[in-house]
Image (tube, rainbow, N blue to C red; front, side, top):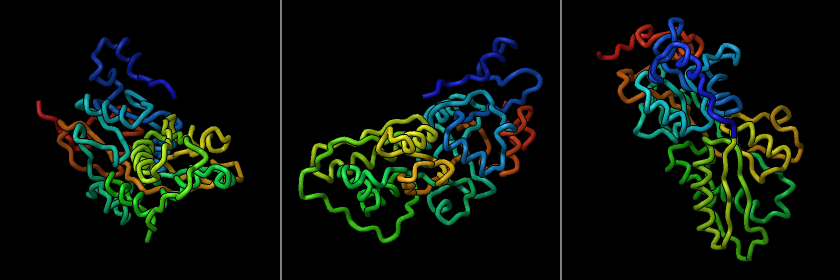
Amino acid sequence: MKKIIMAIASTVLACGIGFAAVGCSDSGDISVYNRESGSGTRDAFLELLGIEEADLNTGVAQLSSTSAVIQGVAGDEKAIGYASLGSVDQTVKALSVDGVAPTEETVADGSYKIARPFELMYDETELADNDLLAEFVEYLKSAEAQEIIAEEGYVSVVENAPAYTAPEGTLSVTEITATGSTSVGPLMTVLADDFASLVGQDVQVTVSGGGSGQGISDANEGNSDIGMASKEVVDGTDITNDNVTIYQLCADGIAVIVNTANPATDITLDNLKKIYTDKSLNWSDIGVEFSE
């Protein structure tokens, strides 16, 4: 996992200011938080906003997990960041975008524009020999899995899902691994726990992070049983192993989050793009005034 890159560190040393400030005279007062390079959430966010990597305002921090971004924004009054909608909690505030609140309903109907798929990758040829992997894949397409996906705040993309039926015989494989996106990871952990309880045997699905890029790489190279990505995975470009199948687990909104002390409730896509490309911008430049 990549280490947290604290881009503000050199600015603090040079300017003699505290961490809550953003920088010297050429920087505005908006503390911009990003995910690290290789993050599926970051890739999807930039693609949806039409921002080229070279033009990105990397801001005060590029963090290696969803929870780290949420924690960073929660502790910084002038902060803005982005995170998986299903992971957002009460420590931060999710903004409406162009007047549309990020919800399961608005992601499903397409009115909330900053949304992306959660995708899984696995070797189809392994299903014949790895009965635990085959069972878990079957479970992920079941009605029970879709119910959990909805309960956790994500959007199911499977219609008329069948009920899951546990295997009658003993499974020969007792542990499989899923690696990659830290946005997909929390949902996969809940699903894995439910699956283990339903299968009625001593089995384990071990979920770990590393980012979407790691999940894609692991799937291509066979380093894990399931790769996880929080963006659209392209066959032939991202996936170069002909045996790997891409399966969309669900859909998820990318919430634009600010500190709870921020008076803003809505942001336009245009202003959001400006914030993430122009480091000199102040909150007042987009009509947000903090009380003294």
